[in-house]
Image (cartoon, rainbow, N blue to C red; front, side, top):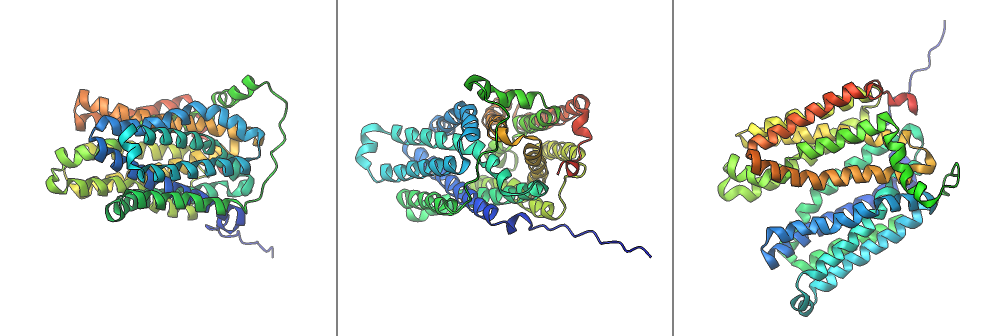
Length: 421
């Protein structure tokens, strides 16, 4: 009688058992938490000083410009310089910039002389640091875990990011209200500084050997050529780009709280609740994905997730009830996290080792530009079509993009990531 060896159960915590990956997650969590707190504190400070919405909008622009401009060069650097060294230098630079915000907040004379200019200058510097960290983190992850655990590692990374995205803004507002601007900056600067101590024990892996030496210009553009020449990767990145671009209702949540849900005096509380909903949904879905990874029929699951996201956005546009709106945004975050995990796994599995930095930089441009431009698109569409109709149109456009990609990218439709590990 033949004996059958039972198939080992899926280990939801497999990636976390790897020392270097746990240290890496600690670095990313502390950095994200510190940066999220800092962004809230900077926003409150600028609002109190200027009271001008335009000046608030310049905060994101000040950081986004250097991030996007440097992305391609930073990706090249991540493929020719040891990645741990880049991470340490960029994180140190980020910590010094954060401490500079603390120093400026402690110098009222400087603020009186130069106004808010020093704050914008420092935020520009944080954009430089994050421009280098953007491609180096995905490139490092592939050196820390085996291929079979890429999806598991991507899921845990997404989970920790979402938790920091929920905690950071909440802590930033509470700390600012209780302790003031200087203490808030000191706390977020300390978190970023502490992340350095978790980064120091990481193994300093050698760079993967490059297939051939390329001229600088050719190396800088090779990430774009690789992505645009790979149907699966380009399709997955495009789905994320257009889903965020057309389906970004988060920027309009304050107006929905006031004009659609008629929150009145509770508008600020309701806005905070609704803004937290997508991240809460993403965290809950992330915990499910650690046990049931969406990789076997990854292409099908990606399409379902983005269509589900679009339907949630359409439902949110017409909802008149707070808890229905909350539930729809929560579901949108859950669907979005499925997309994030699949896209991150595709990025890791399909990218050659010697090109990870440059390809991650292209992915960063897709994500970064879609977030910034998506907020602008949401505001412009709301002015043209009206608040609810513009969000509903955005959800419909998201679903339309999925249908176009399904027809144009048959390889993605049939993708099974388990066969690539």
